[in-house]
Amino acid sequence: MMLLKVMTFNIHQGRGTDKKLDLKRIGHVIKAADADIISLNEVDKHFARRSDFADQAQFLADELNMEYVYGPAVTIKTPGGRDRQFGNALLTRFPIVKSQNHPFDFLPNFAEDRALLEVRMKIEEQEITAFVTHLSLATFLHRKQSEFILQKIEDTAGPSFVMGDWNMSPLSRTWRRMTQRLKDAWVESHPQQKGGHTFPSNYPLRRLDYIFISKHFEAVEIEVVTINPEASDHLPVLGTLKLHSV
Image (cartoon, rainbow, N blue to C red; front, side):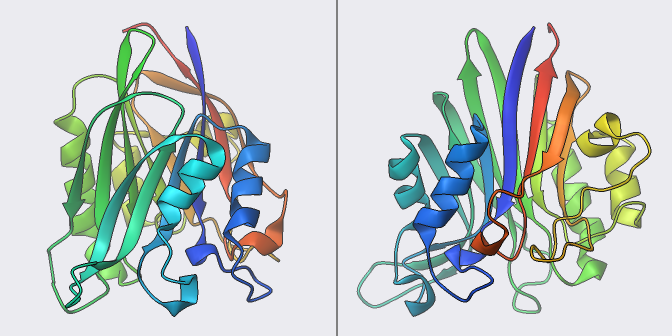
């Protein structure tokens, strides 16, 4: 039996509800939660003045002494050769075996581009795969995006889970589609389905951030992290997962 602590956190480019850019504050929230694997959404890489053109994933990985993978959803080519990117990232305490970024190319140039980041890690003698995503604000794209995610997970051997900002409500069509084949970690830990609200962080009314797990895992405990609600416009979700023998 193995226990993993995983977290999903939309960091809003490090800009808090007080409008201040403070990536160290994001790092403090993650460090206090003491997670092993962290999914990050809305992460800039040399993207714009709003984030001081920083490589935010690398900054947080260095701050927390973790391995990381970055998966851009938006890439803007620049004459200087340093692409401006916006997307997802994964931080981990464990060795990374391989990774791949899968852009969603269903309706290019219609809505903001999104992507699925896939990262395989070795934990003791077991390999597991984590997926990080951020679904579109255009809900009519959710069907294609969720089907793409489910297909990638079904093509993956061994234990896996997917985390991120889904821009959906529990019991929505996309949620029902996901839970036909994966377990919603919050619901497994809270069968009455109450709580889990993450947005807006200063007065959370909506559950937008999810952890879905394969049959290999059991959700032992899951909570919304309220260490510093000002750090981002979303609150992070922290889950303890038990990995059964495979």
